[in-house]
Each structure stands twice: as structure tokens, then as C-alpha cells.
Image 1 (cartoon, helix red, strand yellow):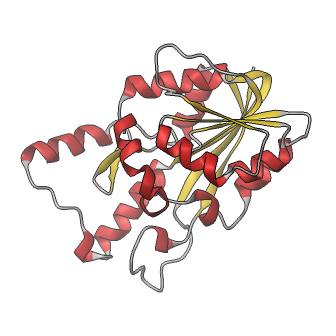
Image 2 (spheres, rainbow, N blue to C red; image 1 turned 45 degrees about the vertical axis):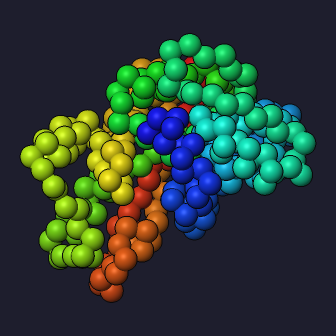
Length: 248
């Protein structure tokens, strides 16, 4: 998931990429943002993509710094959110080794740390720290590895969506899948995507200078995972992890 990938899918972002804001029917992420929102505070939207969270942030905070790796994404976001003058847009690669940022009081990062590249993930987590003022709040959402494995177990055990099972074309592909899963990397639509254990997420944030206040499940319906989920399939539902943390 490098810059070229995001530039390529940007024009069809709404069709290609899962909409967390739309599917978080519990409103937990919005609630977490509203808990820390203030017209006296600044906020950065890290990995803002085409700006789905910008209207909420721009009305709740004094100033928004919206960043993304894709210039096309940012252009789309600017056009969609042109009614919000308190938003600054910056093209930024959070996985770069050197970074110039505008620190804010709050940082929101929704399913942006997805790369299968370990070095880039390390840099990204370190960059989260420098994006915040001392004592600032981070609201981070990432894909759950527990949920992904749970979904795979159900799919295999009860042959759910049999026509859509992943096809492994070669020994090389099988080796790559086995190697990746050891690092929590599993494919979404044939794109290697990092998923996180709850304890892993807490450890990573602690090592990069954060105190974790809470980690919660953001639950989705089974239709987000399966075309035809069995009628008997109920709780626990698939989920992402949301972490609220403070910069020490």
C-alpha cells in the first residue's frame, strides 16, 4: 500500500474502501471525538482520504489539519469540504523517515496504518507522537486480527460464501500468506493488509510514548464480511479496534 496504490484507487475510493463512519452504527468513534472536541482545540485527521470525517471535525474543533499520502485524495477532499474554511490540507507520508508536521491537540487516525511493510509501520507509529502536543489525545482505529481470524474460521467451518473463497495459485503465494500471517498481515481483496491484536496495539502505543486510556470494539454487521451470512450468525460481530490514548 504505497502512494501509487492510493493514487490509483482515489477516484473510486467510496466503492473500493470500507466506510468506517457509515458502518459504525454504535457511534463509538464519533462519541470518542465529541468527548475531546472543543472550539479551543486543533485536530489532525491523519490519512483523511477523501474527507469523510472532515465535516464532523471542522464543526467540532477550532482548526483541522487534514493529511493524506495521496494528492488525488486531498483534491477530492478539498472539493467535497470546500464549505469548511478552517481546514488545511497537507500531502504527507506518515511512514517517511523524516517528517515536518503541525502538532495538534487531538489526532484522529481511522484505518490508515495498513501497510504490510514493518519498517513503514514503525515509522508511522513514531510519527503519531510528533503529530500531537504534549498531553494530546489520539483516537486510533485499526483492523482487528482476532476478528479477521474469527471470520475466516466461520467461513471455512460452514462454507460461507463458498464461491468467494481465496484461491491460492502457487507455492510462492502460499509461502507469502504463511509468512505474512505471522506478522498479522492478511489479504483484503488480494491486498496484504496489516491487522492488529489488542495487546499488540497497546504495546506499540506504549513504546511510542502513549498512555492507553481504553481499547474498544467497533462492531459491524456480518454483511460487511460475507455476501450471504447465515441467518443464525449473530454475536460476536466482526470488529475493528478503537484505541483512545494520551501523549505522555
